[in-house]
Image (cartoon, rainbow, N blue to C red; front, side, top):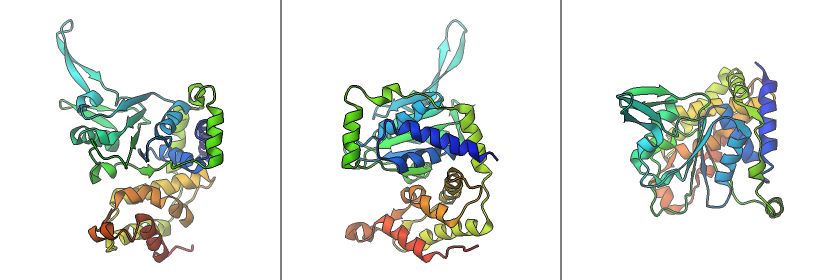
Length: 315
């Protein structure tokens, strides 16, 4: 296992992206973490906080194919997947791949597309393959979907169902910058956006090597039991109508390994799990109805309660 590759890639990507995204080192690290786990990302925040810019900065930093699709109500599944068209010269049907056939796909404002189009991404995100007219086509690795959505404006949107949300490895929010960082952004974009000059710093081969290295990070039986205990706690908590799925447990397992690798360790400790649990879990659970009405508890405080109650392994 070559942990130096993981640290080198994380450092190179972070240094390159901070040229554009100011004051969001933690969020950038989590974007990189999801990439190392080959997991899809949902960027959810109000307009103008850097969701699309963050996705484009990550894509431009990678030596991979990148395509962007603006999701709208009239977008059809075939617009994403591709179609079979009749070629008169060849006198046969020929498959024309859609934009899903790429390494990095930016699904901008994903919740503006209809459920039919949203559901067409399920197979792609879970199995890295596309089925069109009964024929299955594999997607080349690495394959990463970065979706953005605005949680405030609901007019003309179609909320993502639980099955779709569960496919996203991690949900992140960029948030407002600090005053100093916002001034820094104004200064850096006085003449032109630094995004225009951003160069590739990591190759596709390096990404695949780093992803393989992350998989080799060791997780003890006690840490595995800790992850399962957290998941079970969400399933048994009366404040939650829907607890973590098995896919949620796997996301915790993978993300903690990536967190450890980025910290230079080839083994996971409980603090690694605590550091990533909210990012991989909050979008997978649902409040019970009365908590929504009273607004007493937030998902974050519920998870803090749960983490304080679940025994932490000491060996």
